[in-house]
Length: 254
Image (cartoon, rainbow, N blue to C red):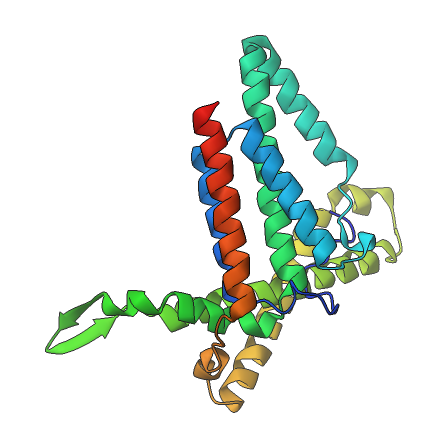
């Protein structure tokens, strides 16, 4: 996707002021509900809800990613493959595609309205009950490494935009290389070259990031300020619960 934005868009809006954990709970609830009840009614309701969140977040239209042509071509090929099976297969395929787009849109909304530094503390706070699960070995009790998992997820989300940017730079630099001969161009593999350079750059950045984290006190500092939900978060969760109950109720009745 060209021009995709995977970081916070600095806009003052009610959605930006919500706790990061509230947004992640919303994405989880929506994904579970649509996974078990993928009806057109609920898919349409979820689409309207996400569109309303986008407007409430005051995000510019330029934030929306532009899908390349080969994505639409792949979707068309998938529909053509499902067509011989029957119309029901095409309808189910369309529901699965829309479900995937909705999950992507919800994930993007979290990325666009949440600072990366708030992801790890929110994940650690949401996963705190899991710390009660553990095992005992040699008289020492070991709990699930919830904080470490939260740090891994947060660093992955933080590193993905950097990796995409590095790959764009590497592709642009490769286009500027002189073409010596047709034989050399035939033996070159651009994908292998870009992936190899990306792995080298990622390893270097990972080492630098590890040194910076160690200098600042270790990974514990990334989850030291978990924050807490406020009144606005309670209102948002109640609205989400009401919307899910309404959609499920209408689906069961009709």
